[in-house]
Amino acid sequence: MTNVTLKDIDVELNERKILNNINLELMEGKVTTIIGPNGCGKSTMLKTISRIISAKEGGVYINDMNIRQMKSKEVAKKVSILSQRNGLQYDIPVKDLVSFSRYPHLKRFQSLKPADYEIIEWALEETGAVEFKERMMSELSGGQAQRVWISLLLAQEADVLLLDEPTTFLDIHHQLETLNIVKRLNDDARQTVVMVLHDINHAIKYSDNLVIMKAGEIITTGHPNEVLTNGILNDVFNINGKISIDPITNKPILADYDLFCETVKGVKYGS
Amino acid sequence: MDRRWYPMPVILMGVFISFIAAMMFGADSYAFSDIWHVIFNLDMTLQSHQILYEIRMPRVLAALVAGFMISVSGLVLQSVTHNVLSEPSILGINAGANLAIILAALIIPAVSFAGIMVSGFIGGMAVGLVILGVTRHRSPLHLILAGAGISLFIYAITDFLVLANDMGQYVAFFTAGGVAGQSMGNLAIVVPVAILLVTGLYLMAKELDVLLFGDEMALSLGQNRALYSWLTLIIAIMLASVAVSMVGNVVFLGLLVPHIVKMIFGNMHRFTIIYSGLFGATIFALSDMLARIFNETPVNAVIAMIGLPFFIYIIKKRGGQYA
Ligand SMILES: Nc1ncnc2c1ncn2[C@@H]1O[C@H](COP(=O)(O)OP(=O)(O)O)[C@@H](O)[C@H]1O
Ligand SMILES: [Mg+2]
Image (tube, rainbow over all chains, first blue to last red; front, side):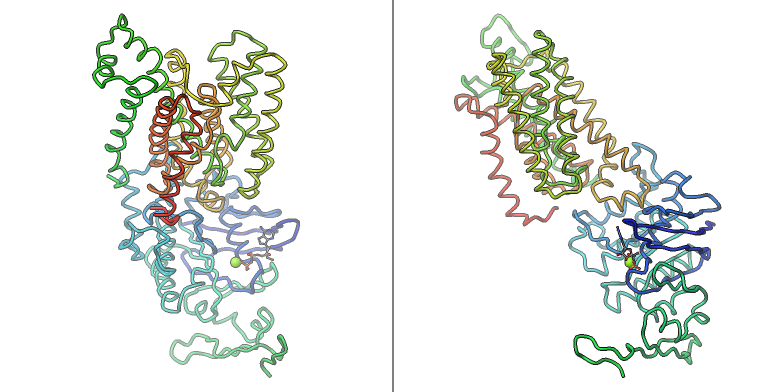
């Protein structure tokens, strides 16, 4: 198992403080979902965990080892990330893109071995992307492309999967399909999943743990049943949410929401 | 086997045919049987064999080797700088190598070819890095502007040195570019160097793939980006400078060939390195053949003339979609 702990992390970008005193231990083998308004630092936090961005203060520890002291390939073997914007500047066949996942496992000058190809094939099968593995990325729909990116994440064989808004730009069917794949992987392989979602009900449905962020800070964390309250929604998103209890699942559900009385461009919303 | 290797036999055949054709045709034409005999039973008492072996063969081989090197260099420069317009001459490598070679010839009048090669590399590297430094994180257009400006400046200094020291003869060849006057001796030095450098790049094909797909990809896969950017960049500049020491200021080839290859074979470097090399070798050898047939037309003009229509055809046909 891989324990990931964020200790007293401050991150600055362009001399602007983006993350402020972040402390968090990722729940091993569980699904953690980060929610918070645009620009509150969710992506920055995931990038810090995967060593794309470095913290100014504090650090990320994998099994009590600071990731700055680890070889970068070792970090990539433990933590894999699906970025928010994974638009490709260059076109590439699906199978070649997924083969990048094996990079951290290869030695210098080493190329892919049969065992690597097997893992790539397995990852493509897991997400159902295998049927278009010979196609170019540019020929795929959004949902298909997302399956390919998740295959890439899987074939990297890391214990911790970070997914930044994996459902944005997908229709509702493909959103659920993507989240179901993630959930199934988490159930089967006990991989630790941390994702950023915008849909509060998806966050409730798929997560064991919620991290609620605002303005570079973690406001609260805990089981969706405990932390989601009308007060939190009000405070974090500045919306008038109505959380009820779903009679079937006994889980909270965001039944209705609106802006507080507010005028935007002369149109009056809410009341 | 990957289907992208399937065209390989045809392409190798193409390289071979262009070698034979370039040997046969030129200012004077020879029969295929003459070429055959020169290769398999050379008789230096025959004048035709002498000409073919001592003048034409080194020239054709130099074109093949330089075409290979310049094209691979262009490919790698485009990937590492994330700039579709990168190529040795735009990056000022040609201008820098040219100046350094003139300086070397001024300081050591009887400088050896190895000396020329080393000075070419130092000059190419220096100017290439300056232009890259100035245009880092800027658009492809900035590269063109800075490259053209700085290259012109370097050529002006070179011209001044040349005029002040009465070296016109020596230099005209470099600025025009071309493979006239090659010797087997030079090739014996260049070919091993080229093999070494291209092998080095080929071993780093997967690093180049990851580099091409951007910083975030590289970081999330744990690549030592700085190390491999520098390594591949330096090797690419070496390749181009060594080629320049041999064939002077060849332009456009290093831009044209990698783009044609990427449009046909996609972006993975284990294919594009090899195919760029082979395409570049063929195009340069055939261009030089045509240059010879047409009264020693500058080879740059020929490359542009035969390359551009093909380039436009591919862009039109593929509509920018890489296969
Ligand atoms: N490279 C950068 N340089 C400077 N500021 C940045 C950079 N990337 C993001 N930011 C700023 O950091 C803040 C948090 O960004 P981000 O983590 O992407 O937010 P989220 O993912 O929660 O929407 C935003 O205010 C954004 O403008
Ligand atoms: Mg984000």
